[in-house]
Length: 107
Image (cartoon, rainbow, N blue to C red; front, side):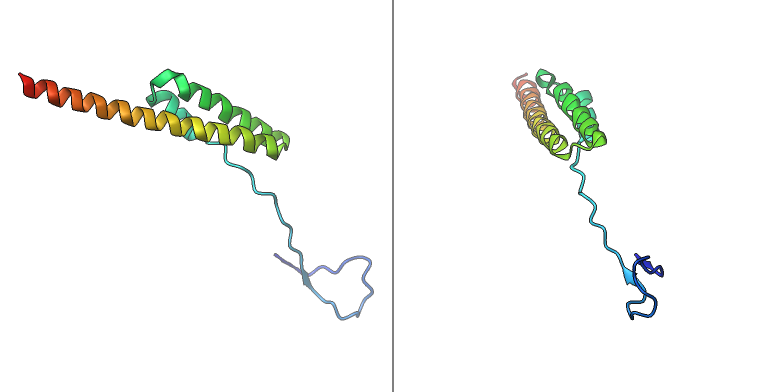
């Protein structure tokens, strides 16, 4: 972002002119709230979706307070639990489909 303002302590006519100020903003860690809500609603095994949702909300709270390390820790736990929930949901769905196909061919 360019600015036409000159710093207050710079003498006039020193040749600096307009400058560019670069501000590095800290990158906020993801909290995976949407994925956790989907895991909570659609992922049935062992209520892991609920636990992931709790960790996601804790991650978002830590991010709002400014504790980025705590937010990153809770976010990584939510990511792991969401992944496990997704994997278990896919495996259970495949097993149910295979059982339906096998039982329908036995009749």
